[in-house]
Structure formats: C-alpha cells, structure tokens
Image (tube, rainbow, N blue to C red; front, side):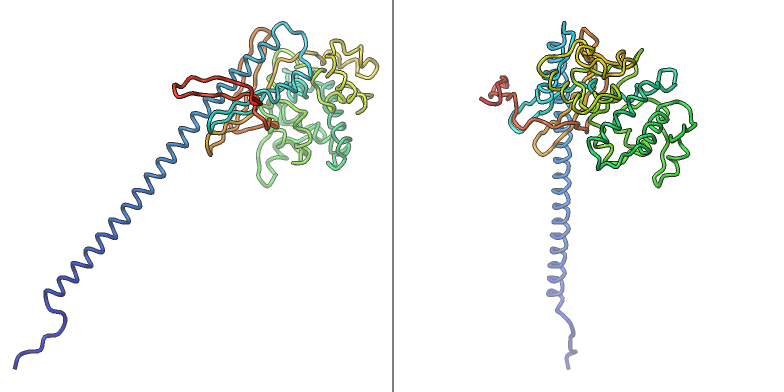
Length: 354
C-alpha cells in the first residue's frame, strides 16, 4: 500500500508563500510611500509657512517705511499734531496685491497717560503724576461704573503701579511687591523697572481683565528720557483730559475734544483756565514725539500682526521698538491703496475706491 500524504503539495505550498510574501512587500511599500508623501507634504507646508513668514516680515518693514515717510511729511516744521490728522492716520495704510494684504495705520501715543511718568529717573514717585493717574482711574470708573472700581480699588492700583516701577522691594501702603505676587496661584515677581509694554499693567495688583480693557486705550509705556513726556492736549482722550484737574468734568473734556477737531489748541489757558490744575501745565503739550504703528499682514492663509514704536526727534522719525504678534486698534475695512503688478513685475499704486 502507498503511504497517505497529508497537507498541501510542495509546489502549492510554495505558491502560497510567494503570494503572502508579495502581499507583505506591497503592504510595506504602500506604508513607506504614504509616509514619504506625508513627510513631503509636511515639508512643503513648512517651507511655505517659513516663506510666508519671511514675506510678511518684509511687508512689515515696508509698512514702517511708509509710516515714517508719512510722519516726516506731516510733522516737518509743524508746531502741533492735531486730532483730525491722528484719526486719519489710524486708517491710513492698506495695500492689497493678489492674495497679500497689508492693513493698519499709526496713532499718537502722547494723547495717552505714560505709565513711566509715575516715577522719576531717581526712582522716586512723582506725586503730581501720581495724582493725575488717580484722577484718570476715577474718570474711567465714572464713565463705566460696571467696572466696580471704587475708591479703595483705585488706591490699590495706584500704589501697586508705583511699586511695580520703583527700584526698591518694599511695598508702600496699599501697594504690592514680590511678597504679594509670589503668593499668587501662578507666582511671578514685580518688575521694579520701567514698563516696556502696556500689557505689563495687567499683572499689577488690582487690575482685572475688565479694568485693563477699559484703561489700556488711555495708557502708554514710553521710553524714559531726560524729563517726563508731555500729554498732547490736541489728541488726548476724554479720560486723559479729565485727569488734568480735579474740576475737569466729562462735559468739559468732551467739548475740548470737539473744539480741537475744528482748531488745534496752542495755548491750553485759552480754553481751560481755571479747570486744569496749574501745577499740571508743565505736563501739557501740543505736539507729539511718539507714535505706534499697528496692523497686520495677510499672505494666503498666514497672518502676522505687527507693532512698532516710532519716535520723532524734530528732524526725522525712527523705529524704537518692533514686535510681531500684537495688534492694538481697529483696522480699515476698505483698503485706501491698492498695488497692481503686471507680468514684468512692475507695480503701480492706486486708490482703493477706484
């Protein structure tokens, strides 16, 4: 008798192994191909993002050049910087080219309260400016009672802001230093130095998100020069005007704003004598040296916010600080300038409403 064979015949078994091997090779090749395609796509997106970032930065530098040219044209030989010019400049820069857009403008910063004026260069509080800051907080609180910023809260914010700047580590009455901030759920330390950005004010004791949102449009963090920066009476906001004297009411400040739109003020005593604290007169001016450029650059799906601090020295303007990623004020919905480019690469600029 012939022995009985069990299992697949030899050739059939080999064919099955070959099929399995082929399927495994195809599967591995497919996985490798998908991984390579995925990595290639990521590399392309990464490269596109880097190129868009570099292009957006160049557009930001271009915006600075345009703003500086505009400032130099406006300020050369002028003794005042008025409110109507400032309002127009806020929406004065907007360029569209294909999928690229640059939008923004510049605004006067001396129409705001400079936080760094609170302390002298010697590190001592300037009591006159401290009183002005107190009146500014009261003015904002009176305009928006929902903030809940009563007299006690005002005193805490005033003293804590002075402590934030002064060089010592001893907290004044109602103030705050490291011992307070390091006991917070997310501890940090007081700067004990000048404000470099208004955003730092949010970290000061007593400043809630709501209070910061109400106050920040009236604040600035300007460089400390040989003397305090002046408040430009012609561009100051209503709360800043109210901070110039105990007797300045909302109605007074509102009237001054309307009058300065029609005709810039060159002598504050002619419009506000008896209302503004006489001791504050050396802190009041009619021109400006510091401006902020704010806006954004959009390239395809990429967006870069930009902020630059511009300084006018009486002869020319220059960039004192540059920061990407921050936008401060509303931007124009309608572009004021449109850049057209032909196939040769030459560009022309025309008004956006044509």
